[in-house]
Image (cartoon, rainbow, N blue to C red):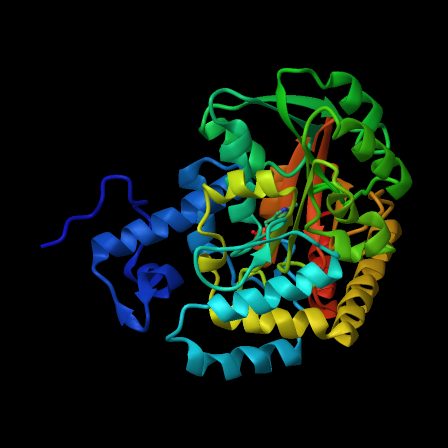
Length: 408
Ligand SMILES: Cc1ncc(COP(=O)(O)O)c(C=O)c1O
């Protein structure tokens, strides 16, 4: 007989067990102990997202209604593009091959876009751009940088609040973190960052546009900052949301790599290209930095050839880019109006999410929304409670508005 784990909530009945998606694996029932582990993991993740005690979160997750609007991970529900899907399907027949050729094709496209001129010979196979590294999403590139610039008690400087993936991973391998608050408009304070930089720092991390605030830095000021500060220390610029800015080519600092500056620009296909589940990202940096980061990642080898084929199609599909941005903007304007009508303020956003102050404890706000089938995220900083809501389809934003109007 299989015994119940000690910490299993007593209220969980057989119906809940069967209902829970985590109980089912590939259409068949898995052993109850393993079921519990899977459910427990899902609850722990959710507990972390919502800042709740694990027991309370377990109850909430098991009893929550199905999500009507998934507005908690800044995904893009308007894609992937039709051309990307077609390319992915037609690549499946080559799925038995490692994706060497596809990654080279993709790397060449990016090398052309960014006018990369340095190509290095490999022990075998054709030369590849040495200032470029591909990843299965940008998280593995952030992780590689966190080890390269964080291990051995190195110090990382960044704004706070910002996207914490690189910093948290760095801390896990011994890095120290120094932070600088955002300005009163919740934008990166470039002057203070520059003044706070010391010889002790190994890296400056800047998420631009910033997550969770959705704000971006004036591109001219950012460029001047990067040119000056990168002479002292490398600057890692996380451009996950750059495609949503008013002028991505101007807002991006990628061209500084080609000009020889010590900046490390990382981009992802997870946002505007809607590839969060397909996993494509890349880093542009000086060749010695790429060599160092490559020690901590399997790079091209981690990416499915199907995803690479789809990424090439999506990259070339400029009509889709325009469509994805327009749909995002339309839903975002609806959200702005919903908030304005209820007398709420918000931070105008250059991304596919919006941060706004709430009037109750933010984790409670998120729980109340979750009970109504709407997933959002909560933050507390600057003595305020905040909700971050991702931009979804118009239908999802209407669900958001309905739930929000009930609790605002
Ligand atoms: C600022 C930022 N960088 C990086 C990522 C990681 O995205 P991915 O690993 O899907 O490329 C995210 C995800 O939300 C993000 O918000």
